[in-house]
Length: 212
Image (cartoon, rainbow, N blue to C red):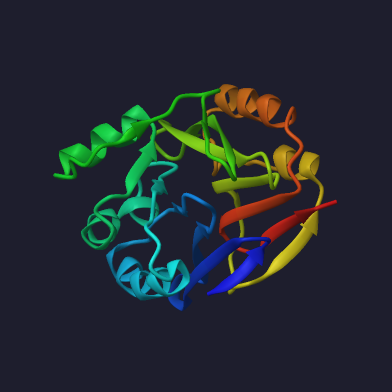
């Protein structure tokens, strides 16, 4: 557990056999926001850390970028401990989760929509997530200029608390076939992302990125 940027906490788990680090994030603001749950085992390890950081405050939202085990596999467990928390996700992700028996109240967001509190403003961006290109979401927090990249900016290795430096244009232009298999959808997403100007990328895997 580490404060990775301003009031953004990072929780990480390195899986040595696949040389990959999995991150979840907590924006410790007026209405605390969790980004991703990890899988069941990661969520079980995350819960006591969340409770420590929250220090008696309620978890308000859980952002899920797309339907995959490390993004939402532990959602059921998290909701048992924080039943008032509302998952934020795309319509496709909500439909998939409801098929697995999770029927909590979802906040459905679409491309270009926002969610605003006293301390943060979230912009949501369409994300054709690999590999089925199901409609997911990326998220930009405007007051801190933090972009939550999910699997879009992706690196192997042990990366808990690690921060690299790069340029936004380079990161966007380097989005590969592995991240977005459809070239037309990849090009469209890149064009939309190049209009943004974040200062920090909170990645799903690998080092976070401070933007030059």
